[in-house]
Image (cartoon, rainbow, N blue to C red; front, side, top):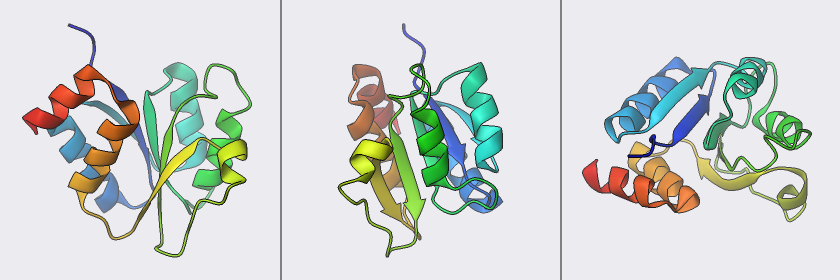
Length: 134
């Protein structure tokens, strides 16, 4: 059996990190967490995730800046990103070319909505089986 998809959660709110990580681990994903974009880049350099969930407005390196950094390396340029942001944040047409932000989920959110979006973006048999089990 293949390893479950690896998800990196980047958010400076410990409650959000906890809630998402518990939900994703219970769903069968492998999860790592970072409180800021710089730590996320260190984790990505050690092991590229299959998908990244990033807060749009972390204190040191925003989710958008993190996404732009990921595009600089071929090994990380295709990592899909779900951006967690205030309701007013929207993806502009230019974001499709300058980042890998595939979805924006407004805060507050339901963890099950994030899980649904992950399964949709990964679109793999393993992630579908994981979602059915959760």
